Length: 462
Image 1: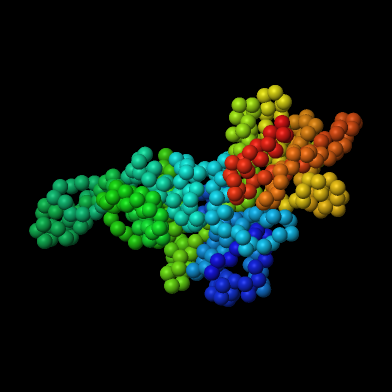
Image 2: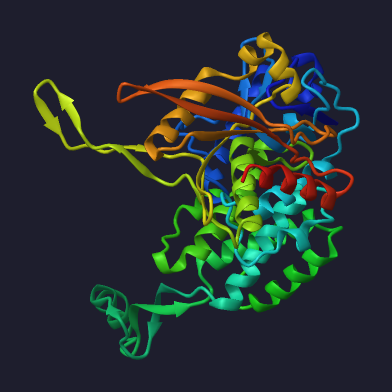
C-alpha cells in the first residue's frame, strides 16, 4: 500500500495500513524513525537540536502528522510518500491523486544538484539519478558510489591483533601459557604470541561487504548498481564474509584522515538498522529517506544564485555577522558576541550588497497579497519582516528581499510587490523597502523552462 500526502497533514488512523494502526505498531514505527533521526547528519544539518525524532508527530488518537520533511518511509511492507507543499496547484489544493514518486525524486535531484547545504562528493546527481524512480534506489546508488570512490582512492587497512602459536617469538609472548601448557607437554618450540598486523580484512570492510551483499538483493532491477557492486565485491575478495549488526558500526574508530569512510560507516549502519528483524514483517524491508524542506529550499536558491551570478557577484550563505559585542549586566560590561546569520547575502560588483531571506511558506499570488489586506496579514508574518529589517540596518541597506516559493503550474510573477517600512534610526526616519518575491521551483514538464523562469525572476532583483 502506498500513501501519498503533503507536508503538515493529519493522516487519520483509519487511513493507515492495517498493520500500522495498533498502538504497538506505532511505537515500533517511532523507534524505527528515532534510529534514522540519529543518522540524518550524514546528509544535512537541519539545525534541529532535538534528540527526539521530528520526522512525524504521533498523537494520542493514533493519528500521524507529517511535518517539514519530504521523502519516503517504508515500514512493514507499506510506504508513506511525503510531498512538498509547493507541489499543490494552489494553497487550498490537497488532492494527491496526480502525484508520483518519480516527480518527487526528479525535484529532489534538481534541488540537491544546486544546493549548498548537501555534500555528495564524486557524484553527479543529475547524470546518475535522473532516471531513478525509487528513493531507496537513490540511497543505494549513493552508497555504492561512495564505496567505489573510497576504494579507488585508498583501501582501508587497520591494525588487527592476532594470538597464535608460533615457532619464534613475535609481539607479546605469553610466558604463563608457555610454562603451564607448552613446557609441561614438551612443546618447547611453541610460543603463544599476540601481535598486530596491518589487515585489509578488518571489521569495517566486513561491514561494507555484508552491507553490499544485502543491498544487492534490494537493487536487482538496477543493472548499473549491480555491476558496481560486483566489481567492489571482487576487490574485497580477501575480506571474509561476516554477518554484521548495527552495533558493530559503533565499534569502529576513525581518524580525521578517514572522513570518507565515516560517511560510508553511517550509511552502512542505516542499511543494517533498516534490515533489522525488529521492523520487518514477511521480509518486507523498512526504509526511511527524508529531507528537510527549508534546508532544501534555501540551499537550492543559494546554489542557483551562485551559478547565474558567478561572473557578477559573490554569493554567501548563512554568513556570520557580528551584531553586537557589548553586553551589560547591571553595571558590568561583558564581552559576548551576538551574531546574525542572514540566509543569503549577494555582494554585487556593480550594485553593492543585497540581503535575501528564503521563506519556505505557502502564500497567495503577489497580486492577491497586494490587494487583500486580510491575506497579507495572515500569510506574511511580522517576525519574518523584523528579521530582515535588522539585517538591513546592520548593513546600511534600504532594500531587503523575502523569497517565497510558488505553487506548481503557476505563472511567473515579475511585477514587484514592495512594502515601505519606516523606522527611526539616530532620531531620523528611514524607509526600508521590503520586496516580496515568489519563485518557480517545481520541475515537472520542462526543466529548462523552469530554470529559465527562475533565472528571470532572480535576475530581476538585481
